[in-house]
Length: 158
Image (cartoon, rainbow, N blue to C red):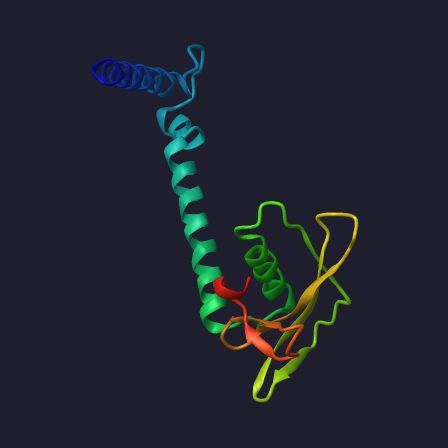
């Protein structure tokens, strides 16, 4: 255990030294006559990283808004559905056939987008099911093949 701790501390120190060295070397040009403000603006890695984090946060907020408030477009609902189907199923690959972008009433009082999903993970091309993404609340529903009823799609019936 003590050796493992020593290796961990040594590796951490080495990583810190490499990081400091690389940070100190970025943006330096010995023969440059640029002003300090121009160099700082052109090579600000911290600003780029901050922008990337902000963009990622905005994207997460957009997805959360779509799911909480429903979807305004067929494509947004499609992307959400395909990503949700892929969660926890690394070998799964799905495709939508018979694309119909109109809002459909799938249950009395419920409207959303309809998707016929096919499993493309093998050569069978077998239909995986009929799915609906509710336009107003973003919930996913699947048509039960046995009972022919529309049921909420979730962890218990994946």
